[in-house]
Image (cartoon, rainbow, N blue to C red; front, side):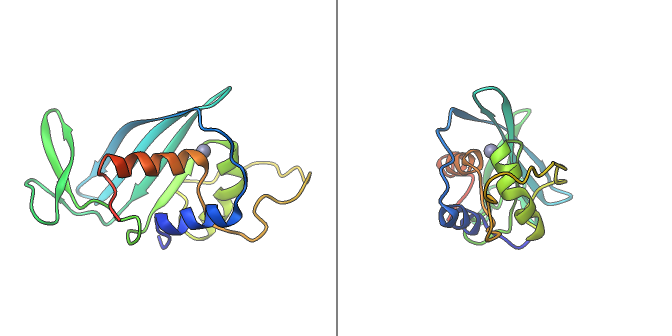
Length: 160
Ligand SMILES: [Zn+2]
């Protein structure tokens, strides 16, 4: 993993395509593994016709049973608190994925090539119509991933 969220946000801004209005992105859950040092934030986005799965993944996260200078409250699992080093937008390498078409067609392949895509890349048919969406091979985020980043910042799960 080599890209950070700020680099993905900057890539999206550079491409500057209109990604339309966001209907609703609802944060659903956090999956973490202290053994694997991984942290996965998940959300569901409600589109006009479909629901999309939105995922932001970090590894090399440090977990602890108590709060200290480096570890803040991440979540409760069965009312037991879990503490972790909160990922940084500017510093922590990240992988992302969304099941929407914009992510699939604009970002998935480039993000995957830069090791910033989470999971496998769905195979899809390139129709060849119109201009390529991302001719400069910019890494970036769809509107749902951008919104989930904002939600996580507001919840204090991501820091600068
Ligand atoms: Zn999306």
